[in-house]
Length: 457
Image (cartoon, rainbow, N blue to C red; front, side):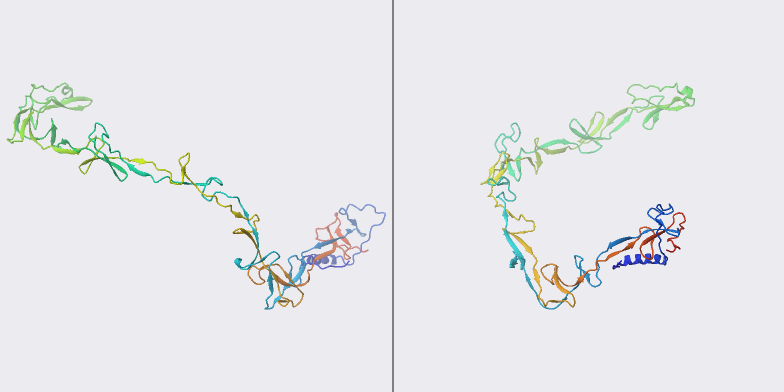
């Protein structure tokens, strides 16, 4: 069988198989006789015993492998069929031209362009307008509003002090001036010693006087008359003792002083304030004896000036503010008011916009512009191949500029297809003549990686 070129991986695999097959040198396979119709069960399915009955064999199979194409020199072309190297550039200009249907356009920087009329939409309302074609409008504000007014007629508030006083517009308010303020109710100076009685302010002046003597068994004790419980030492009897009474007019109420011991409350003492005797006041024009007190008159503090209800005292005048009556705004000239109170101003229809149906085109005014790169036709002497056949692949606007996809190359020949064909075994190893696959007997096979048959043909 003719050997074909192998890839590096296939070659390695074949070298391993060859090494194993060297162990089988001198091996000759003898087929079983016609009388052995059924092989012994010592072999795997599809295998037969060799003549010396030490191993099992079956015919090898021929397989093919198609590995990726490679180049011994150069690079693969994009389709993977040829090998090439880049052509050497000679400093000489080639020529460029636009594809059929395109021409250079100065307004686009000399690009290859093709123009077609753009499609126009029907007329409609301009941007920002409402409505539909033939009745487009915009909404505008009402105005200007008239100057606000104040009610200046008489009897603005019947029955009040400002019956005939009008209102004056001041900024955004109507200012109403009422009757002059009136003095407020006078008050006494703020003091803990000044009192008010019957509209008169006064303070109490200590007079010259005396007190009624204490009534026995009470005796003077400081500012009060006091008597102690003679049975206070005995709680049992002290609880039954009561305060002695005094004649009416002797003084104030009698107050007992009590104390609890062992759950029994006893009275320890009783006291009362003696009544005041005759009192005389200091001789002065503003001091007099009233209800037994020496009272000195105190000047009344005048009350703050007050205005009628609804007015405030501002700078000595009574002022009230009101909101002026607004004058309703109207729609400006050239507009109309609709049913919801908006002002509508008619506007002219906008012409239909232009657009390009083809998304690959760019709208330029009323035209759709299609652009493309130049076709390059290099001069015969622009590129040179030291070996191989010169050819041009790709397209673009320039053979040297940015974005170019044009390339001049030198084709060296067909790429190596890397097709590998030869005998192989799905199980076992090849014999030295590459015709059979050998495996050890199932019942006697050792744990070795490959059989070493010892029979001869």
